[in-house]
Length: 118
Length: 108
Image (cartoon, rainbow over all chains, first blue to last red; front, side):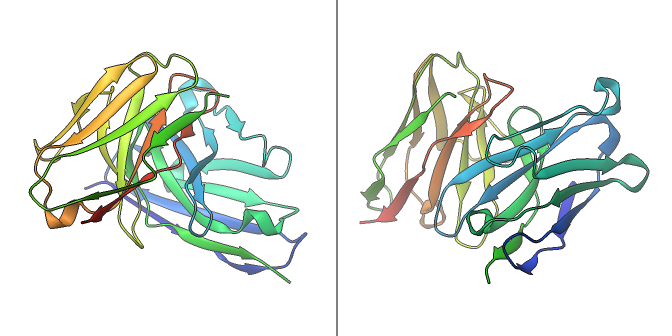
């Protein structure tokens, strides 16, 4: 069974940093592209960014709203995906989901809440 | 950026009736469109990909159609567990996936 479990969310002040993790199991993690998608409270879904697999040189892409502040990485030996978030803004407040990227998302984690507030 | 527009924002339908949800793309996305269902406090669940292919385990009452810029999700006979928010997503532009703003399907 495919499982994705996020962790690392919490309350952080504007300008602060936070690192989210996503632990994957039940599939060959190293074969897959992996993405982060977020959802602000009461709002819709927003793609944050993706990391490709080793075969595609682990290249990354980001939404314009987070480019230069967020960094996606992965550790295939640990079946883990990460999202390093720096220079956080109040508008980054959201539930952050990791998701397996087949172009569409066939599996999602349960999400972790990040609240940016003073 | 490809803008996805869903209509209506809210749809009120009685159990057992048919629901039809629409999604329009600002430019052609071919058949590179997915539909998701999200219930309160839960992650989205994939229903349809490739505009019309049901994901694993999705009941046959869910069907998708369309191509290019106009897409439809139809739920043929609404069950109580189908009342939720539905999102469409285009993945034709692989540099920037975009979602619609969602349609809330509520009990009439």
